[in-house]
Image 1 (cartoon, rainbow, N blue to C red):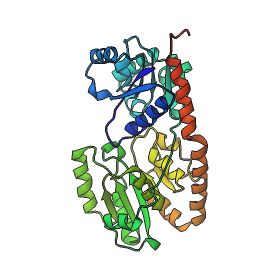
Image 2 (image 1 turned 30 degrees about the vertical axis):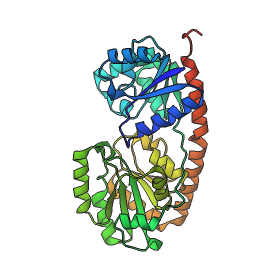
Image 3 (image 1 turned 60 degrees about the vertical axis):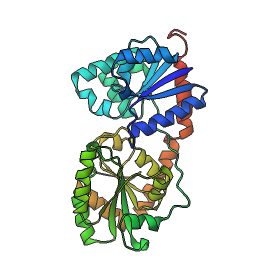
Image 4 (image 1 turned 30 degrees about the horizontal axis):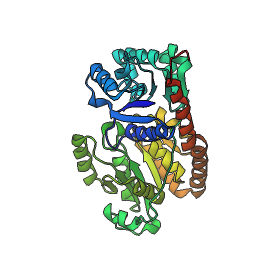
Length: 346
């Protein structure tokens, strides 16, 4: 089939990475998949014209509101994948909630990353109960074997021996929902007590105004560094060499950075929000914190307790390899897209 895949393709976002991976799965199943940014279309009529011009037979959308609403009423079968914002934020806005319910009426299937996301969707739109499937994000990591950790430390202006260094890595596009400044003050205070601990924010610019705010704050904060965009294999190598990966987001659908850290056998400390708690079990697969002070307490505990570090690393690795299989994700999308072939009664 010739498929249209609509997603928000803003660089350095989880949606863009997920969309590229799902497109690869669909093409591996033998379909021709045209991936387009939902923001490129201003009205349903533009979508209708594109569908006709490209002779498209079916469609898929990532994000129920931003992408899914554009597919309604065109007469072609489509499926949707929930993002994070649609279920965490848009669902609380009356008009958007209503539109998303209408999208689910027409969609042949919907994919949620977690059981909790599925439960939220079913509570909001009971009529869609029978068409929501759960498929966790698949993870495949490949660190750059030639990566030089000491060069990265120099780039981060960390002039200490790597032997006794503890680098906490926060990976996010610089936008407010990721809240990269949430831990900065508390971490900086800890660094002044223990100069061998550093927090490095690997944060490509997404929101230019907010990026300037982050840059200014980091410059005033001892022990905190900001590094820009990195190639994926280099970033995986940085994760592998770090002491722990941190997530401080206000809202998450499913954090690829957390899953990749688990796969690379690196401890995870994550803000206790629903999207993170769905994949991080406290003191089992990682550590969950509710405020900056608790983060520092847990980070100190992790540094001083090798047995805890070893346990959460082993459990995290086993969890991600059992529940976030890249091959299982490929098989699921290959199966689901067959639901778009023919009429609903077929």
